[in-house]
Length: 611
Image (cartoon, rainbow, N blue to C red; front, top):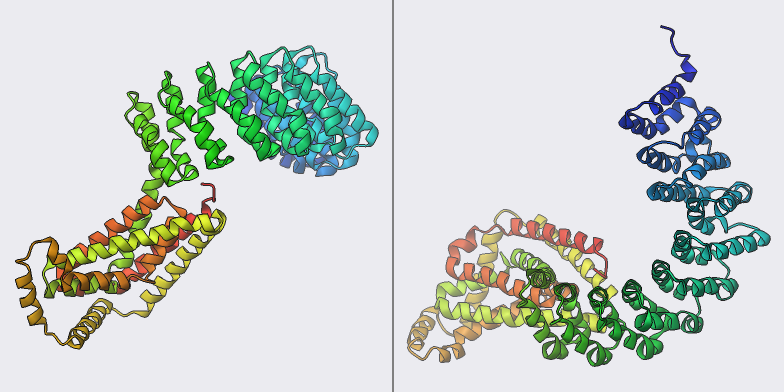
């Protein structure tokens, strides 16, 4: 059997495999195009491989889809951007096939190639390709052309730009609804490349034509791009050209799908028109959508209620939006209630504490008792914000307090005084301190921008982590015993200063235990345990961490986690006493605590402010 000539071997193998009846074999061959191109070299790839692919556009959709994707990253294999134009013919053929996903992938690849081409090549090769597609007899070519104008327009001469705008206007008025839909979808992209002088004169004229189309699928796609167009226009032009269309759609359009799209896009338009028009025009339009006859429209509007209220002041939200939210909480459609349940918790920080308790809490509790499980699940699933703050606060406070001076102080006091009074004093102190710290952290975002509190919290995590690691590396193996001895010496010194012996104290307190339970909380032992823990926590890592965490997480979860962690540590100290305290390695605690702070710092750094 004669051997195939070595230089022709790769292309011969490709031809054989592409003619094979097995579709998987043909797919594998297309996915190895880059390997074949390397074997052929740049020149033979341009002269042999690309022309062969141009002629091989009659295959199964899976093969053509793979080919369209491969060609989009093929510029390095044909010799760089100066030869990028040779990739256009096969992709142009793929833009005319009937299968939508193949056309979309071919258009995407053409956009990638066109964005890298030189301006001269764009004018000589890319723009003529767009013109040919836009003038194609088959609708598929014209649909594909709509997605290429924003690439072709850049770098053209004024004459060509005028011609391209005229062609796009013709596509917006095409006889085929599919072409008009494609024109409506890509109008926003095309508008971003145009000079501002043509936005009002030509683009908005096209927009008006599309919003008046008889096909609701065209109108809803025009609405989908209205927010992008509004941001390109001056505020007064947006109010004059875009706002009336949206308001009209929200109340008069006969298609629920168009109103559904308006409900999805309305909050984005608020930023473009400004607060005054939002209050006078968009708020009534949004209220109408919340009260729409179609459940699908109410679902879309309910899902955006938190985002919309973020753009309003609390008074407007309480006056106009909350009554509708209350009605939606008892809506006849379970899907409407489910959509509302998924976002209603986000309204709490917008309305504030008092309004949340007065207006939002009854709605929240009503949804929590809903007969449909999806509604209840959506309410409960949003408690992850509370859970995240609880987990972080619990972990950080626990590793910060184990082996801390207040921990040893509680252990020593429990050995000398009744445990019940010591535990009560210590727990009361940590509850008050945790609530105060979390309150400071919660108030910080109201005084400082949210972005800065997030960054400050991240820096605090890293700072505390490095601080704890440094303390751990400095300490020796007997850190726990030394800390215990130090605290015990301080307490003994304090007792001597007061001129009372430990034995006398115990005897006095045994007598006081015969008093009623509540009066014991005014005893010196309770006050001593309270003051040691309360003032011992000032400036401590756990207090500063609680402040920073409450500024970046749900404060209720932070308070709950901090109190539980402090309660666990204090209870262990009071019950375990000296034996537990003397066995704890402060060095290990400091190192593990430092690592935990660093981990939370990395997580906070990688989390966006909005999240």
